[in-house]
Length: 129
Image 1 (tube, helix red, strand yellow):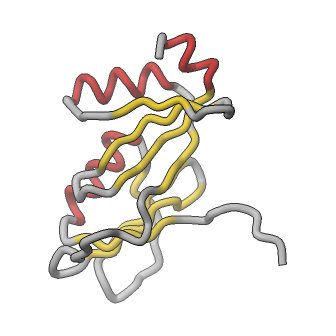
Image 2 (cartoon, helix red, strand yellow; image 1 turned 60 degrees about the horizontal axis):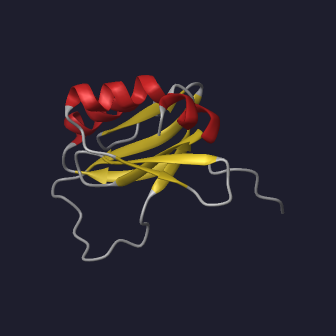
């Protein structure tokens, strides 16, 4: 067997409507087609890939220390993304990965999940980051 890529991330949330709004509004994902499961949820698309699956639950999942610390997506359009975060008052942390041509923009969704969006160092240089 040869693994090729991560297909999607599944997130349980008691905050479904706000999570859909955050991923669509902040990350520019699209709320799209989802199988007719017998429980609430949403599939959020990055292009033609349903990359984030949300599952609505009654109460917020509890964890002292999560097993998954973050998930990441690659992107282009760094300056536009930074401008959107700044205009929305969303805190973020920009980190250059040592020895790799990547700048990470670290953000947290409205449930506190850590996500980093990866951009090339060339975009980071152009944006002055």
